[in-house]
Amino acid sequence: MPNQTDQLRQSCRRLLSEGTVTKVIGYREGRAPYHVSPHFATTPEDCDALVLTPFCTQNLVRYLRGLKPEEGKVALVVKGCDARAVTALLAEHQLTRDQVYLLGVPCEGLVDVDKLAQKVRLAEVQAVRVEGQMVLVTTAAGEQRFPAEDLLEDCCRLCQYPNPLVVDEMLGEEVTPRNPDGEDAELARLEAMSPAERQEYFRRAFSRCVRCYACVRTCPMCYCTTCFAVQNKPQWLPRTVGTDENEMFQLGRAMHLAGRCVQCGGCDRVCPVNLPLRLLNAKMAKEVQEAYAHVSGLDAEKPPPLATFDSQDRDAGEGH
Amino acid sequence: MAIETIDQPTATDPAPWQPRLVAILCNWCSYAGADLAGSSRIHYPASVRIVRVPCSGRIDPLYVLRAFERGADAVLVAGCHIGDCHYAEGNYYARRRLTMLNELLHFAGIPAERFHFRWVSAAEGPEFAKLINDITQKVTPLGPYKPETRDKFVLLDDLIAQLNTLDEATPPCEHVAAAEATEAAGS
Image (cartoon, each protein chain N blue to C red):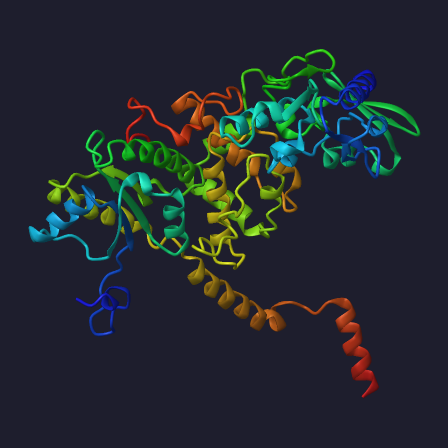
């Protein structure tokens, strides 16, 4: 990604000095070579800090929430999933296209730090880059190569849309999707279980949830001013953190994201207790696609599937 | 019959357990259907709790999740037949949302018998009664949706029993044995 980084810095400097945008939201180096922080550049000089690494996990679309027209145009660094999130927000009229300038980054996939830690000592990592089917990790001892399958985030391994679909400027060349058919072995494994086994699996998982709401905070599609989970009037959920309440919270959230989730994997990544949140959302995305031929974030003109209808929809009481 | 007697059978008259069924019905068709069942004196289980909403399109899927979270054993959602909605298209929206909710509940492993989504018109009193009967029959063998509270006590009893037998059954750890030996020698 070094060339991409140079290209990105150049473009951002140009955009800011020409006054096309008032701000660039991107990534800068974080506390370690396997970490980045969001970066807000307002002057051309700020742009030198921008980086692109396989650890650019934070979904910057989150910062578009509540963007006011008087703030002017904002440039945003977007990967494939981020660009879909922008499109989905456009479809829901949460922002207008002229408020954002999209700097698209074709994405080879993000490296999962937890998986990386199982292969090498994190403290020794100097640089990581993804090249096709391999992940190259540079440590003091030299360069090590690992299959991408082993180190990438789950959502990236299964990514169907790595290239941003809507951009104002594309940085670098488009990449081949890792999973063009959208196959998901883990989801298939769960679907093959009996309902009782699945209930056991999910309730066990939900019993761990501490309701930190990190999944809500990181989600590009969660823009309610007050989440139903913390709302007082009406109070949907007791404040108690128990399996039943957690189940309702997580299923309620999956329901809210049905046909809206863009599979960026943010919730999965930030969950401190490793709930299978990606699977819940992937299941709903799959069902919505099968029933209503809708994939979130592909078309800014199409309303979210559960906010519209077709008289030919599958009828009640069919299936299961 | 007072509502309390359903939930708390007395010792003298122990009623068999019946699932608590929450029925969310649209005002114009399904509620009128339930009303017709009542005024026609058709018998159906009294353990059904009816929530009347203006239209099935008004039903937030959270209603259903909330009902389960609060301990409902089964949930029925019913609205006007497609094409008969009082507000022309409310039930079309409901159909999409509740179909997806049904998929989600199925995926989360909640037995299919516990969630039902049907169309009931104002003229379908007998059908409504039959539906409630059917659901009750299907859910009764499954037992309560939330047996956790009961299980918790079972677990606690098990734990207490285990702790009680611990002394005899398990030899003390080495350091405990050593400490006891020292103590015995000291005294």
